[in-house]
Each structure stands twice: as structure tokens, then as C-alpha cells.
Image 1 (cartoon, rainbow, N blue to C red):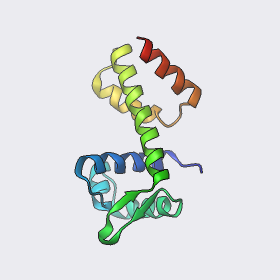
Image 2: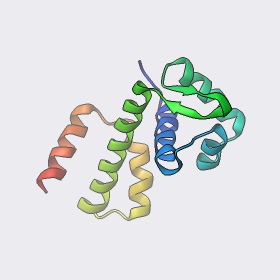
Image 3: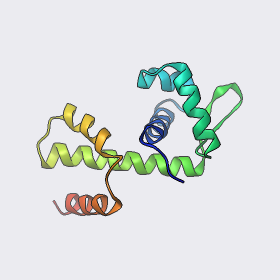
Image 4: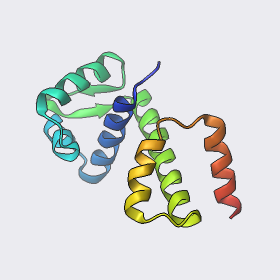
Amino acid sequence: MSIYESGEDYLETILLLHKKTGYVRSVDIASELGYSKPSISRAMGILKNDGYITVERGGQIMLTDEGKAKAEEVYGRHVMLREFLNRVLGVSEENSERDACRIEHILSEETCRKLREFIEKN
């Protein structure tokens, strides 16, 4: 199933918040991303309908197996890109973080694989 860049960002945010606090609600995502609660609610409805999340009693948001796999894939690309930009190219930490967040959504699998191979060799 295809997912848009914004959906990937939401899944990644849910993953990171869950690792950080163990409990994620729409209000937590809104606070983390600086988006309105109605925008988050709409996005969560789409992710739920697409099978990436479940919403438990009390509003707790949980990643499904598919959602967790996608979130970890996106976050893995993010970390790899941030490290490459910062360590290999010497880009500042601030710009590495911001640019990795943008680039992570458009890289092909082949490019990701080649970057990982390059990083592991160097």
C-alpha cells in the first residue's frame, strides 16, 4: 500500500514518541509536530483505515505490525541520511537533521542500499 510523505512523518513520530514515553495520543503528536488537533485527527483516521495504526480505548495510538515496519523503515533512512550528511559530508547537525527529514521520503531503495554500503565501508 502506498503512503504519502505526511503519513510517513506521522508513523515515524508515533514510533519515536512511543519509544520515548510508551504512550501516544493525538494530542502528543499535535504537540510534537506543531499541527492542529483536527489535522492530526484526520490523519489518524486515514492511517487507521489504511491499517497502519489502531486507536485503543482512551485514545492511545498503537502501530500495527505493518505500521511499525513502515515507521522503522522511514526512521532507518532518516538516521542513515543524517549520519551521512553530518559525518561524511560535514553538514551541520541542524541542517543534517532537517535535510534528512526531507530526503528520507524520496530516495529509491537502490540509493538507500548504496548509501548504507558506503557508510559501512567508511
